[in-house]
Image (tube, rainbow, N blue to C red; front, side, top):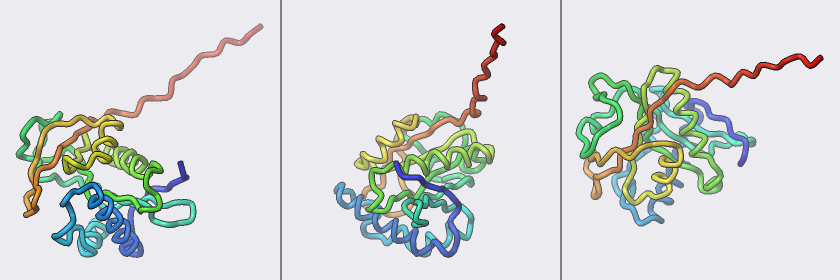
Length: 194
């Protein structure tokens, strides 16, 4: 796995983030999914808005290239208020105690190298430090790579949510992971040998 640094995106990263999202759109299209294919979402304006709000994060490789992106929101997600299923936490968008991961993508040249795993793991740390009880993620039912990643990172499938914007396939599988405190490293007592 390559060495990656995760940081908040800046205005200088907008074009690179948009490029990574275009690679993500192409990867989704190869899965036969209509998500992100016709409505121009996410656009450069969406990226710029995420950067301006401080919710856009990037994974940068050793060469300084942006190879992955996600948005980490702490202000609640209205579509999560109606779920066909049940969340692990009882928190609504009116008073969210959860973080939400959206707009995830990996550059085509960095696919299957652990980039998104690194980004999501770092997003969990950021959310925990900000006081979130959990992280929620939703994805298209056919997005097996994202579903597999969520499950491998300990996310629980909680049910189905529907997008609030028009899209041909509005149902999304909703996942949540409880954020627990990082355990203290185990302390070992050593006896002095005489």
